[in-house]
Picture 1 (cartoon, helix red, strand yellow):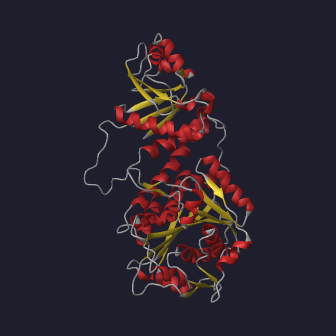
Picture 2 (picture 1 turned 90 degrees about the vertical axis):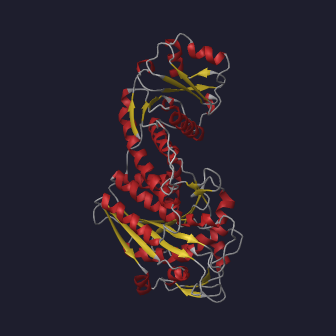
Length: 502
């Protein structure tokens, strides 16, 4: 898809389609009013006849409007003007792109970026339009033998901005939006891949392919033999029942000078989670291929970061592993020694993600990081607490938590902070080891973070639980969402001091 910005009057646009907004009840936006005047009231006459009310998401495609140079005019319902917020704006853009892609309009000039969205500027509107467009056009067809594609798909879209002064801002927004969209697509593609293809070795391969495209990226893989030498016994225990070797992929992005302490992102990469001996119910177990959503998102963020060429140092860790039942699998009742030397009593082998992450979090101490953020589809309890709308954030460092929440608001990739009080630590005490890997049903998301916090004393750390946001279940929309790539990329952009304001 090709994107550009321009500033011009709608009547001068010669395109396959012009896109303008209509508000409830049958109120033309300022741009639509200009077109109506030029057409001699053609559009307003249609609205008076009841062809379009202006409700959010309504579409009306007009052909050969009098005195208009463009072949088509697409009227887009935008709801009530004063109520247009960021969520509704993104929904309108998505619906518009879907409609354009079905009309045979291979190019379009879109004036929706001139609409007033509460609390948002031109940069945000253009960038979100780019990201939403790419997201709307995404499909995972790599493994289909018959691929259904539009006969004349949308290939080019121009976003109009109110003044020429805003063109540089619009161009910057397009570049940033495309970088985020690249990361989201990579995250989705890897997460949607079936577990018979996407195993820990596949994650390493994808990271190496990405590194070949960017000179500032380098990759190393740490297999089971090296993990054993390092004493990563809990990580190894989780993968013991699988035929696929556990591999931790470490990606280095060198955008800053050598003295700059890196930001480290650690992604849980359970390429399939059967639950192990504590096996999961059969229903929807196929979706446990998405238990590597954290690793997929870290891979996506590294791609976005490299495309943006940010002047910072970042290390991405993809903690690849597979949790399967087998004669050699670890068991409830086992006591494991972590890389840190602390011991863990296993109460449930389906609480495996924290056992992989705790050793990965200890491993990254060697980089003397400025900040560490781990990302994981860790607990079903987070889905109960926050649903599919927000990722959970827990942190032992208030400034870092505030940074992440701010990035979530800027990127419209929502997150919510949960407490991490010492009182919750009592739930993971064990009579036989330093801690157990399960804290019971109450506050399950928080107690999982409490477990991880015991391995993060040497740096500023935050934990993101994306169990509710990493994928969508059931129906035609089933699949990976690419979250939280937008939020984490925004976090890194903020750290790098990237200019975004109008």
